Image 1 (cartoon, rainbow, N blue to C red):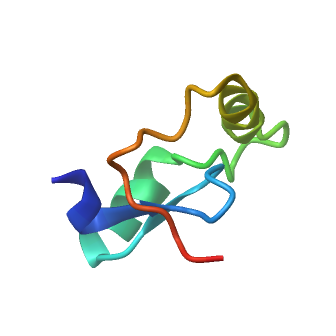
Image 2: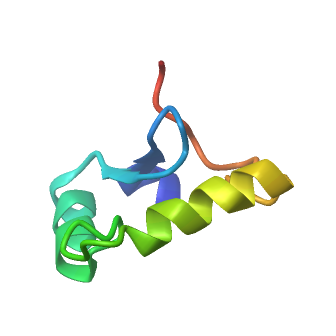
Length: 64
């Protein structure tokens, strides 16, 4: 289950691994575009938030 390993950042632009498996997955798959200088996925997520498409309602979010 997704919520066992991941949580969205408070602003919902980053996926945070909360278990060793989650952290390794975020790192290996570069889920937050930390190796890309243009931060494409984070910028895309910001647009999805503005459009009301993100994050999924059932996904947990980090406390502010």
